[in-house]
Image (cartoon, rainbow, N blue to C red; front, side, top):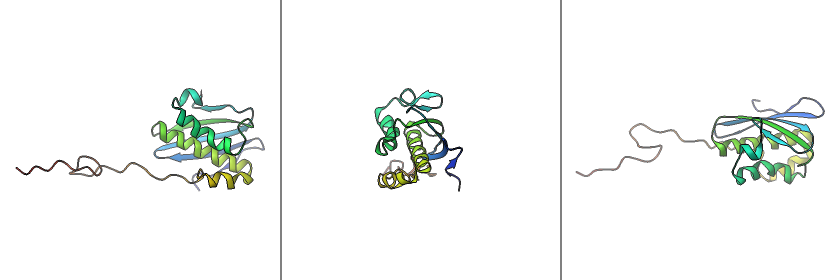
Length: 137
């Protein structure tokens, strides 16, 4: 299993989340509700409110926002992919900490890895599916 949930100690849990080309490594510790991404507060790292809400969502639906401190490192992809990867990692870590939250998180479709990635550009075409303009003469 490449993206497994590891229980480091009784207070710390490690999980990996993935989305597009982004990979997030998430450590969840007992704490007061602080979230750090690549050494910054998550609201400073992710400027868009939609990304901030996506990261908070697994914690709000399980009512555990003030119970855990979360430290993440994210590599690859863009901001949207990174936010999705952090969300996926937090969801998996929450399930690792208390398996009874699995039902709620699974219902909100946050445990499945979204495997959609960018389609490659094909030779003889302008983009992945866009063709060059046809010239009659």
